[in-house]
Amino acid sequence: MDEGTKYFLQLLISGLAVGSLYALVALGFVLIYKATNILNFAHGEVMMIGGLVCYLLLTAFSIPFIWATLITLVFALFFGFLTERVILRPMIGQPIFAVVMITIGLSIFLRSLSGIVFGHHNKIFPSPFSETPINFKGLVLSHTHIWIMIISALLVLMLALFFKYSRTGLSMRGVANDQDTAMLMGISVKRVFALTWGLAFAIAAVAGIFLSNVMVLNIGLSLVAIKAFPAVILGGLESVPGAIIGGLTIGVLETIVGGYLDDMMPGAKELTAFVVLFLVLMVRPYGLFGKSEIERV
Amino acid sequence: MLRVNNIQVVYNDVILVLKGISLEISEKGKVALLGANGAGKTTTLKSISGIIRSQNGELEEGDIEFLGESIGQKDPDEIVRKGISMVPEGRRIFDDLTVAENLVIGAHIRTDRSCIKEDMDRVLTYFPHLKIREKQRSLFLSGGEQQMLAIGRGLMCRPRLLMLDEPSLGLAPMVVKEIFGILERINREQGTATLLVEQNARIALHFAEYGYIMESGKVVLDGPAARLMENDDVKEFYLGVTKDDQKKSYSEVKHYKRRKRWLS
Ligand SMILES: Nc1ncnc2c1ncn2[C@@H]1O[C@H](COP(=O)(O)OP(=O)(O)O)[C@@H](O)[C@H]1O
Ligand SMILES: [Mg+2]
Image (cartoon, rainbow over all chains, first blue to last red; front, side, top):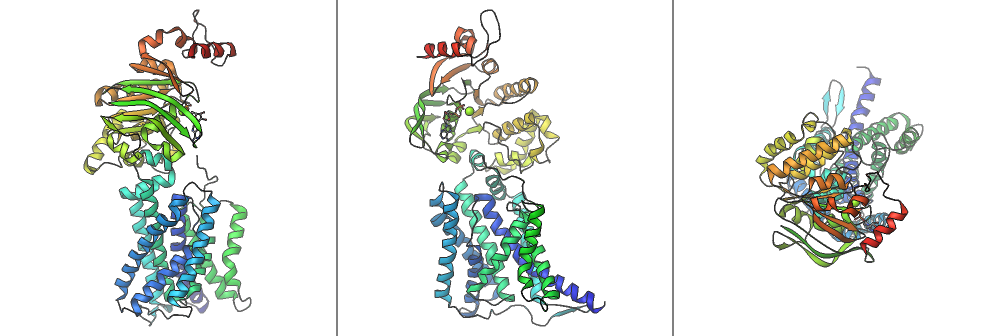
């Protein structure tokens, strides 16, 4: 393999790893939007809090990584239930604009609160993954990237099975499809909403934990979610596969652009997501997998 | 089995839509609820199924009793569990789901998961059209098939009472005939009581044993279906026939006025 190809593959793989994380964030975002029609602008903060809580468990309590992760997931699940119950349920029937403003308020509140609780300094996340890279036919792969891809793929697979075969998963799809009719099936829409928020928050927490492994862990981590927005819109707000493909696409393109252009044009990497989004929306205004009309009767 | 007792329903705290409706269905009975557009038929069904509150409606007066128990203020999921299933107006199938998934979701409240497959097969014997499309996304069904799916889905919770909101709407006469044949069979074989809302009075009164006729939120006439069909006013305004058997338009102003007089 010549150096050029090797460099490209290298970029591709780290792009896929980063993209998997964008995909997870986008996925949580889409789940909430599909079921409740709410754009949750606090999603990035939830992700960051996932990273911070796991960090706290690892450093202050010296809990092994697996357990710290599981505890963080349970925490995120209940955090989602709580958010739905306390902040969003009272907003049922209010104009959608007001509800969106509430989530923006929540994002600011959570960022400040995290600053107070965890401090504003950069934290070094004690990575559970081996530092020595794997050398595969001349390609250098980090353990972290490989694990990110494996776990994300497993998570997506589990979710797919959950939505396809479980009674609860099916009821969640029913509510997302037609809320009133779901009620007629005896589905408790309130319960489904709570579950949706819990599940989305747990997925965001997974993304947050992994991101803390590859990025600086501080309050700014929440801004990664801004990258997930193009992923979401690229995939088409209501499409779960779209969120995953959107996330991977943005991750890969951004890394490749960064790898080739960042020397000449610093900041090109950060712009990629938005340029791609712009170009796609010119051709397909509802995203790659979006419905041409979003109807709610 | 079901007794609706003088209910008043208000939307958005101000719009009085049902002004004291009473009706009754006995075990295994077939009852039709007829009336023009806007009379309040759908609102009546929504009040019984409990989803009225999620649409800014409120049951202000009166009560609904099912199997001797008051259900007027219960949540929709509890009411489904008590044995009342509703097939909504406009079919409202879950078009993101497959045909089979639509049936499974209809059985959401059931705990005897192992029997669901059996029931699904039974429903599919009533609706063989659906059988061949089981794995397809339901968005691609024809109107008639969608109505069949909506009815099949409504049966999956093993209801004691099935409520249907205008199942004939927008369907070809042949399809309507087929669907009502199946509804007959279901009533006979499963013993499911049926409350049918229709604008098509002819087909509804042939199906039902008893009928109620609604006008602007009130029941203006009720009686055994055979007697209603003989009633001159019903003949003229709902069955669209005059003495010399000419077809008539519902909306003819002169007659509309006469109907009003007859109502008051
Ligand atoms: N959600 C609602 N909010 C306010 N008014 C409603 C609502 N639903 C129905 N109505 C009104 O109630 C009346 C009866 O409607 P409906 O029960 O749907 O009649 P039908 O089914 O007999 O055609 C109509 O005048 C309609 O405009
Ligand atoms: Mg109606």
